[in-house]
Length: 194
Image 1: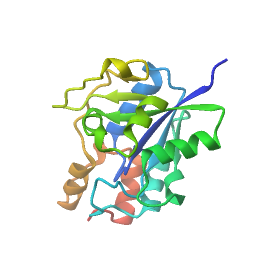
Image 2: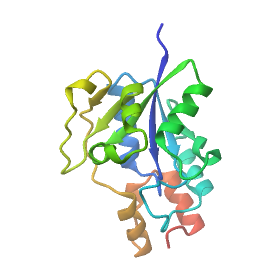
Image 3: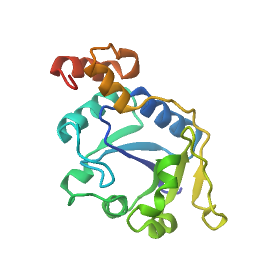
């Protein structure tokens, strides 16, 4: 019996939306992954803080969204790490704390095409499996020397962004169909993104 396979899905989830869930659901059902862990990022070093909601609020929204998915978990592992947090350090910490699990990084085609800018990207590519999901307008090229560890998945492209949802809510639009119902109720109750 091999190690349990865990997909690490990092993001700011500001807010988490159905596109995130569609992707995770697809990867759980159509890949080798046993579980998907949503790692809520405190602050991405390649993004400005801007209108990033408080870490605990985004964590709570992910927790609400995953309630009905037994194979999905939310992780705040990066909250206790030094800022900015880097994926290589996060995966290292998770591997150290869970020696019986094997971790795969889940990233979009846009992130893959900017992967050379990531801290210790060579080490990441050699040490961990990576699943790349398609993004509109991004061509995904995997060099042959990485073909053993790194794969493109044929996940459906859901063209929804957290930015679009935030801006639309700010304009007073009803975005209920774009966000899990529990999360939308939470956003409404707390008056978030207004």
